[in-house]
Length: 214
Image (cartoon, rainbow, N blue to C red; front, side, top):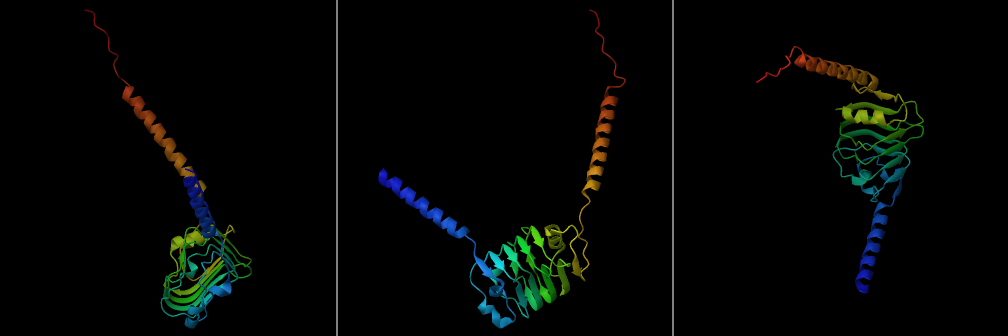
């Protein structure tokens, strides 16, 4: 019995240590994840970076690449630049990115790309920058992101009115919540009134049954 207990405790300890190690942060520098031409791809770090300090620059790439290094990034303390790429597709996948703290540059600079499909996940919840421009999205064909991703960027910004410097005409805007609440209240009130009126009509004019004597 004692041996079984010791074995169980050992297994639990190993599992706890493994969980703690797997949950630990991996800190990287932006230069470890930056590439300036196709030859730099082989020099990308193989570490599963979760927190990155410094700008990430992805430039002058041609064709789809296998760059899974960006998948694990959760926090970026710098800006993301993707410029002058061709047919990169969805090679840059940032589905797990949660926070961007940029310094003096826009948080995202996506410029002069052809065939780029940047994947920004809904987990992105906070974006801050010291620049007057929050996001720079120009000269991309087709559009690098969908309107739902634009909406994610809009809501993630710590500014009430984030500035998009873009030539892409999209219709993302903040919803007027009070407007929809007002109409919900109006329609709700009308439904209650109509229901009461129908109930009243159903009883109106009903003859009272009288008991007949035997």
